Length: 378
Image 1 (cartoon, rainbow, N blue to C red):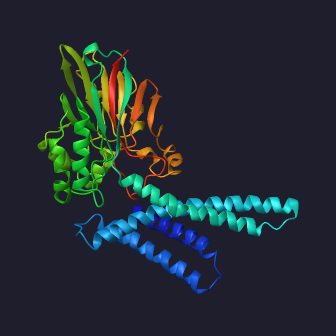
Image 2: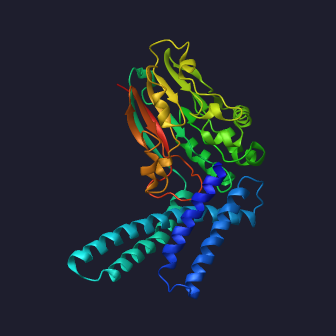
Image 3: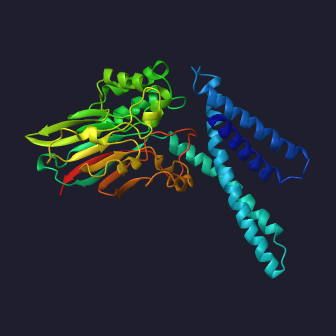
């Protein structure tokens, strides 16, 4: 049923975009027929790329199909947005023409052409933004109850790396080197590590085994681990020296001053094969009062589950910051925030835009990042 709905939506988007592009040409002309042929060939490439991305992919030509299909997915979204905006503005222009008595057909055509012409520029910039190394930058955050011994502690917050059919070992090698150069005290990854099985991606992810925080290196699962093999990836991360927190907590100590790191599974993991439902109460059980609690949870909305559990700060990902504008507005329909800081009930949440991308290798208005959170006592 899910695949049926996805395909129906995809067919509808292609039909709409194809009709808007073909409308610039004489109906039935060679140019109009070429638009339709190209549209449905790209639809087939997108479907083939999605299937090939889940299989063992040779370097070429299958990878070329995957990359083309996923790039087209992003371009299709931009064309849909531009076409929809063009139709809306065109409708307003026609309404104005009824009042003024002037012919608005030329204006409508120019508006639509201008918006469509922006798409390749935006797509090129978006691909460049997605494939460039994520920005590593410091973000200072005040933590209630933080002891002076922990003032200035640095947490490297990785999330949404999505290693898979496009991002591979070279990208991971560079990421590890750059994060390590930031000299983090604690390294965390808040989920969506991969898009693929351990068998396919172990070699690509192996450089993560060399990434260490002075006080510890921690991982919690995201929803994409559920599609890629939860238990196998958790086991692999443990073999690489990462502390996988499955509704658990760890006490970190500096000169007798404690900091509690709490980790829960993804919001929907309980419904996935091999998954464990998130349980904040279980994760904090046994923790003494006094030590500030930092919660690792893949989705910002998990702050609602964390109410009343004394969480000083939650670190999340999942949203990609929207990844492709104006998709960020749709993210708000499912999540209480998109990126940065927000206070949800009694929990302060920081949501990273993530280091990688999912689906289209495009980022528009939401550059990739690896925040280095510098903790400050209040």
